[in-house]
Image 1 (cartoon, rainbow, N blue to C red):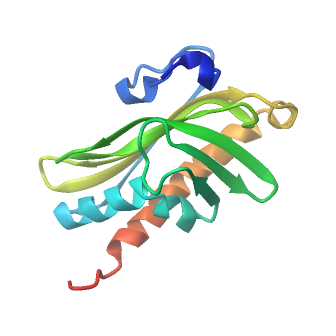
Image 2: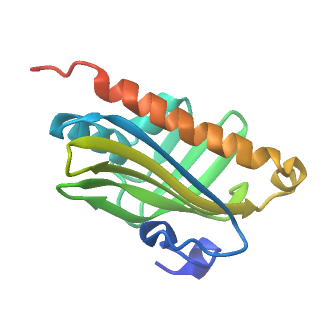
Length: 171
């Protein structure tokens, strides 16, 4: 994936955790529950966009599942945020993805949503991001933007915990 097409340096940095300087950094982590069933449900919710939709944002994506190259626009009221998935993972212990901002996004940077199954069976959800203002109104809002971003990340965790605690058909 080209950093130039996405408009920021450090494309994929949320995967390694070595976030670039010159950006605000965000790391929010919460426990979702325990066991493979919770992990599988959480991974499906994140990769299939249902967590985002349940948080209350509009999502339109070029594919029903997050994968590198998939274009997605997240909408909250009048704000439209075009992104592109830069990496995705779905293995025995990790499921999630990161998207990077495209032209027209209010911020410039990357955000990752990752579900992990720990060796002790606990299931964790982590939001990792780096960003800086890209449009006049995010620059004008200054210190309020990180507050909103942290609140959104925490809401994602609460909503995902609720989604995976619901009984599944056949269980």
